[in-house]
Length: 393
Image (cartoon, rainbow, N blue to C red):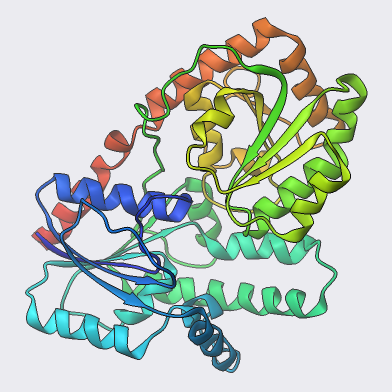
């Protein structure tokens, strides 16, 4: 099939959850013999890929995106959709549709759907990934920033996104979500009979099981450090959980690993010598291998946390919250540890650090669980069925 594939950010290199998912979708479709035309936006210099040969990359400066968002304040379309809008990019997409006999259009994330929402003569699939409205509703309820402007923006965006998600579910032939929890949430408001679940996966060769030496005092948190859920999780752990751990293990170390940490995150390290903030790293595996425990103390968010799956795959035991576990059907006490109260969260980490047999058991069971349920190749088989089904219509 000939597929037009739209992404809001160039998915190469595949760093970060959204880019990683788009990368594996593209890789899978190409490996199945589909001819894929990738149309993507960038706002900085990039390294080009070796998977897709037919691609149109359009530079959209951040300054232009911010101006679009200002204009978008007076509409009903979500600001994150406005941020990625461009008349010139739309023209390129329209010209490509006119010149090519596409069998299908595939949109990655809500942000790209406005470009093709009105098209009726070509089957369309959108990978929403998460129910973003669920994430925003949680942020609005518990927002930690005492900044009135940000609170207002999130409140407005939460309502707009939920309304827009309904429009997209109606205008696309199929929609994809990452977990049943996200589908259940949207099902409270809309018909989700055309929604399919395709979970994330893990590159099991890249994140191979590690059975070597590790630092018994080291705790790691990893993620994109410019997103609200990850910022909150790191601050929450540093302020409310880590001090409890240090009472039992004075030499405990907390490593925050991920791109673009904000000033509040860097300040954690300046105030506590036991906290380190790395910023971007070339290879996250080295930090996971050397850690005794990986933590995901999520209080916001939706979908599936890649950081949890990758940690489990490499054999580093994970302690997370109920929200962090959403979409991952692992068993507390067997493949993962799950606690919501700071005292209990800290206690589970101390247990894993001090009890090597417990750590080993969780490590092995976590790896087996990921092998059985989160292989990209296995999970993406459903994508090929979806495409084949739409082609027959």
